[in-house]
Every structure is written in C-alpha cells, then in structure tokens.
Length: 263
Ligand SMILES: Nc1ncnc2c1ncn2[C@@H]1O[C@H](COP(=O)(O)OP(=O)(O)OP(=O)(O)O)[C@@H](O)[C@H]1O
Image: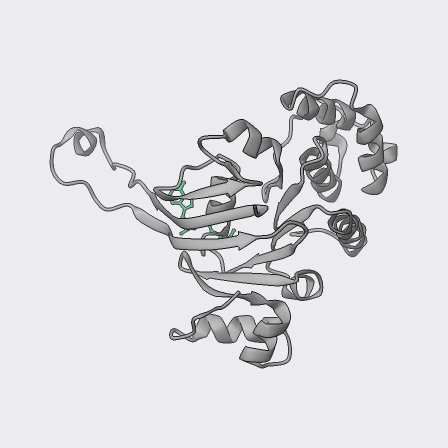
C-alpha cells in the first residue's frame, strides 16, 4: 500500500452558463475545461515528493481532489489506501493540507484556531501537541494573539500548524513559502524535513525550484493537466541536462515532445 495513489485521474470543470436562459435551454452546452488529463502516479510512505508545473498546470486541482474539495471526473485517488470518495473520513484523517491561500477566522486566537481544527478531527485535550507544533514553528509567543493581529508570514505558519494538529501521516503543502521571508522558510523547511525524517510523507508544490531540488527525492511535472515528467530528482537532472532543476524545468516545459515518465 502506498501513501498516495492516483489512477487515471481526469478533471473537467463544468462550464458556467452565461445566463439563466442559456442554463434552461436544451441547446447543447459548451464543453467544460479539462484541468487534469489521465494523471497516474504513486507516492510511497516516507517520500518527499515534488509536484511541479507552471501556473494553471493543475497542481491545486489535484490537491483539491485528494483533500475531497473537488471530485475527479474519472479515475480513483487513495490516501494510505483509503479512497478519497468512498472512505472520505479515513482518507481525510490521513491527510494534512497547507493551502495556498491564507484563510482564517479573524475572531479567534492562534490557540483557539488550533483547538477548533483539532475538534474537526474529534480531538480534545490536544494542547500538548499544539504547544509542540507552535514551538517548532516559532509561534509559541503568539499562542494567545488574535489571528487578525498576525503578519502574513505568521498567518502562514498557523496554516502549517493547522494542517498538523491531527498528526497526519501524509502532509501536502501547496506553495507554502509564497511571500514568506527567509527566516520562516528556513524554520519551515527544518520542521518539515524533521517530520519527513520521522516518517511523514510529504507532497510539495512550489515555484521555488531550488527548494524542490534540495528537498524532493522524486518529482512529477505537470503541463496542461498531464504528467510530462516523473522520476527521481537526480535522474531528471541527469537526463535533461542544464545547470539545475530550474534549467531542466524550463527545457521540459518548452519541449512539446518531452515525455519522461519512468519512475
Ligand atoms: N473551479 C474552477 N472552475 C473552472 N476552472 C477552474 C477551476 N479551478 C481551476 N480551474 C482552472 O483549471 C486549471 C488548473 O488550475 P489549478 O489551480 O489546478 O492550477 P495550478 O497548477 O495549481 O496553478 P498555480 O500554480 O497558478 O497555483 C486552470 O486553467 C484554472 O483556471
């Protein structure tokens, strides 16, 4: 059993009708937008896996399907063996997601936010773990601060803490370091790397390719909703050439014939 399994996942977003008349009419509807096209890949337990691709490639859509926020049009997705639709509760319990957008409730303190999140997973008396997470993310002195009083970077740290309250074996980070200062990046990566060493499986999307190169053992690259590269970071670099992962990424994205799916 793998930590993440995606089999032939496709996603077509339904078109929005422009008017009520169009919606009610029996005329053939416009085609939807295909965000993912036959994506298959597995991530094994303990891997630090990178999911890369340009804007609009389908990374967030794939993460939304894993988190149960969007339904695949076809194909199956499993987290720790649990189907994301059929075994939603268990699959969601196995997963912690750090979302790309900063969303928070301005009326709660940091600790209240984390207690509330614990409650969603049926966890009471979770303060020992909450304190450990806060301390590891450099948030210990902010526990009683109101969410709206935090800086953007601090709020992002709370998003990471929220994803970890139920100690999920699989953690997905959707561009966690966008707009974050060097200090937090270091703190964050040290903590995530430690969680990975302790056995957590990590899936990371980022546009900072030097981060992906340093951290990810294996990488999948999406382009237009399709997997165009899937291999170990070292093998990809060796095969594509160039100075670094950024070079390799640009070459792959500009080569319409590149298809390097081996691992
Ligand atoms: N709810 C939606 N309805 C219609 N189209 C959508 C919806 N969500 C995403 N899309 C489209 O699907 C495609 C993939 O979007 P997605 O957000 O998954 O890309 P991404 O790789 O995460 O991009 P980024 O790097 O900019 O975050 C885009 O063309 C986007 O406009």
